[in-house]
Structure formats: C-alpha cells, structure tokens
Length: 101
Image 1 (cartoon, rainbow, N blue to C red):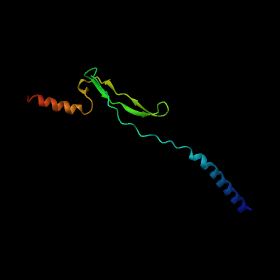
Image 2: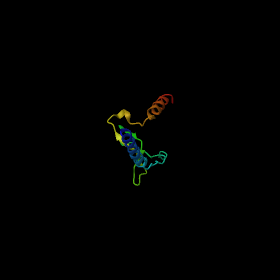
Image 3: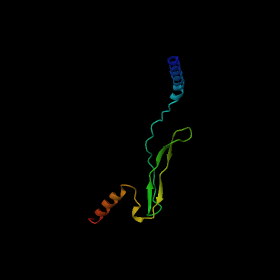
Image 4: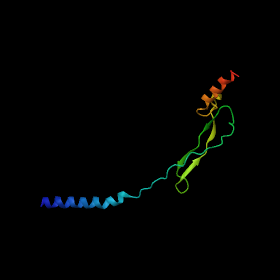
C-alpha cells in the first residue's frame, strides 16, 4: 500500500511540475541593437571650469525604444578642468609648440 501511495504522490508531483513549465517559459523580448553615437555640437563652454558630459543612449522611451540623452556642459568649480577627456593632452602639445614659433 505504501508503495502505491508513494508512486501516486510522485505521479502527482510530476504532473504538477509539467503543468507549471509552460507558464515559466513566458515571452522573450529581444532588444534591438543600440543606435550609433550621435555627433553633437558642443558650442563654447559657459566658463573655464565647465566640462563636457557626453550624451548617451538609454533604453525605455515611449514604446520601449532607444532614447538619446543629449550631452551638456557641467560646472566643476576647477578652472584647470575645462577641457573634455583627451583634449588636455592636445592642449598641452599645442602650448609646447607655441614656444618654437
């Protein structure tokens, strides 16, 4: 009798698990690839202490698409940091060349 009860219990468990599996599969959403970076016109910095923060894409706009957040100037309070990443080296190289004119 115990053997029959145990087999019935295992059968019910298996049936329960099989019943749940299709619900676990759900729907899979595939996000489209991120669009290429946009080239932005930075204009002139508002002050010597402003740094440029690049714009970026983020997911989740109206209809669930990619949304561009524009770049902007941000005040740092430090006058020696007014150049965007990588521009300080170019500026230093340029300043070194001025002494040889």
